[in-house]
Length: 337
Figure 1 (cartoon, rainbow, N blue to C red):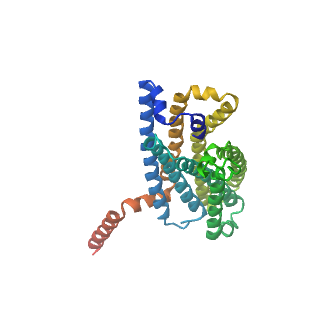
Figure 2: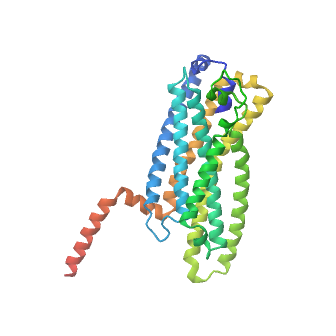
Figure 3: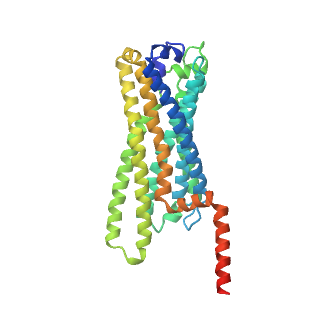
């Protein structure tokens, strides 16, 4: 997102881009923009409803550390979709005199929520690790207070990394205001994302390999009485792995795309300027792919987590279900009498 804008800032507005667009390319670009607005709106609504549903979980494991992390992940997905929605609205509505401050804030928020999701997945991997290797001590390790502190640290670390771009423009010319200094600096907070993401993925892979080996050993010597608990742990483990794989599949295209742009901009920036139309269209496509992750996660919760399915039913069918149950029990009582 930032590479394209910085490599094309010699033009005054996006209208100059469209002046060079063939009609077919312009139509595709506008179609992708509309699709992005629709997908991001759906993702925001889906994750908002998921967060409400998770808050209504009523079970023995209600609002455990795992469900608190799931809730935080849903919030992160929804906010990421919201930042992408603001990005596209900013491009569409402020094409002639786009505020650099607004643009940089949106970009920093986008990186912040992307890192929040990544760190949250790593925290969920840690949660599974202690649940499998320290089952007796797990309730005392991941208490409500400690989980809340952990989530707070995830937010703080994500915000510091996502807004690190705002800490770098010291020593720039005084004639520029602060937002312009941030906009023109060569540093990009997305570099932090590209450094941390592979580290987190490698660490999560190692954790889940070890967890899988331990689960397999426990399954071989499992007594009949603990079969149900093991089944729940395995299901939660597979659900988290599915979420991680989905995130990687939707995020990797953006990662490779941005890394490629960074390399090309350092080697031959003119090559980017000559292909501005193509890059802007690819930018829309890849961000739409990334948004699919924010829609996929609520679907995974609903399909894989029985407690969330029940919470959805309570959320959407609360009154009808209660009325039906009272009528049914009333009829059963009449028959018995």
